[in-house]
Amino acid sequence: DIQMTQSPSSLSASVGDRVTVTCRASQSIADYLHWYQQKPGKAPNLLIYSASSLQSGVPSRFSGSGFGTDFTLSISSLQPEDVATYFCQQGYSRPLTFGGGTKVEIK
Amino acid sequence: QVQLQESGPGPVKPSQTLSLTCTVSGASISSGGYSWSWVRQHPGKGLEWIGYIYNTGTTYYNPSLKSRVTMSVDTSKNQFSLRLSFVTAADTAVYFCARVHNDCLDHWGRGTLVTVSS
Image (cartoon, rainbow over all chains, first blue to last red; front, side, top):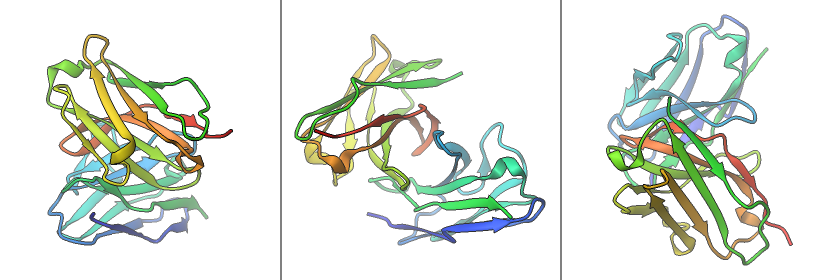
């Protein structure tokens, strides 16, 4: 199985800050990397697919980059509604696997 | 828009079989082009992919659960289902159904908590 490692596991930032979350795959996964946002008590919501493509309806302050084994999710200007846990997921091979999550809070 | 809704009978006793159904609206399972997945989340934990099924009935299961998982699809009702046998307390989790497109999960159900307890 491909292991997905996210860092940090949690972070606290101020409104308006730029926030970056990192995801590393245990082997190359090309750009088969997707990002989800999960708010408390809710289902995950697809934010970014194929490493850098913004899902329809997702605010443009979210962006993704990376290829191979190292990927990042960025929020250009953190907003109160961005408080959530963010997960990466590889779609390169089965079983599909997720990162452990990064909890983002407002300072 | 595409909506998915999980349903199931409620708490399950150890060693019994967990059964859940996902009803899809706003999209037709029989039209193809997608697969239909189950994912679970243990309380306060991360996400675990259980497997997915195509409208043809072709399935792929997570090897960690493969011996206990069965998925099926009913295109006439636009539903797909999960059965997990010989459950233990470790199977207590929120179970989500989701649509899979190009190996990413683009629409999710709200999830249903399944508790395994005697």
